[in-house]
Amino acid sequence: MSRIGKKPIALPVGVKYTVSENGSTVLVEGPKGKVSAMLPGGITLAEKDGQLFAERKDDKQAAFHGLARSLVFNAITGVTTGWTKDLDIVGIGYRVELKGKNMVVFTLGYSHPIEFPLPTGIEVTIDPKQTHITVAGIDRQKVGQIAADMRSLRKPDPYKNKGVRYTGEKLKKKVGKTGAK
Image 1 (tube, one colour):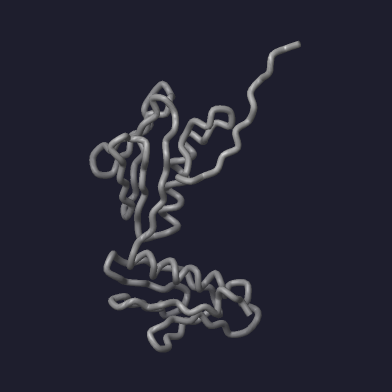
Image 2: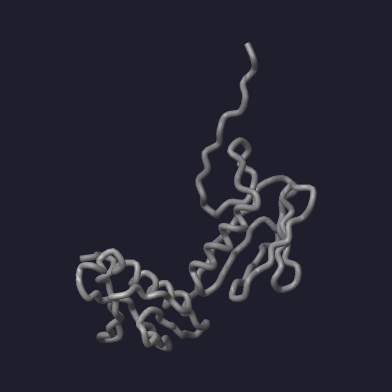
């Protein structure tokens, strides 16, 4: 039996869920909004004592049991507290600024600034030093994808460690050239 799949999901007050008629998606509604999560075939949701359990029909769905529980848990957490990813920009002259409501402009050492449009449901906050970004939203997958796309604009350089990185990310710095003998 899946260890993750059999863990209960706490259902906070004010959170409602509805399973689609064919049982393939779950719509979770909460104080922050609505999120839909995929539900693999053969997995059902059961509510007992204010907690939600992911149950499977037989062992053929064992591989999807933990996945289904994690997707529903991520949706419930998203509509109650939300998800965030923090990015740091390291390098002389590298900075980021917000242009309007849904456009982020990066200056990363290229000959031109990079304009990054934000999709709906994603909010970005930038610190006053313009070197720290917080990406927030209710959909965990979307928040992580936007943060990864921002990081890919200028990945950390292995020699000087300049670029866009996740906060707390450990980087290995390579040694540069040595003098010729």
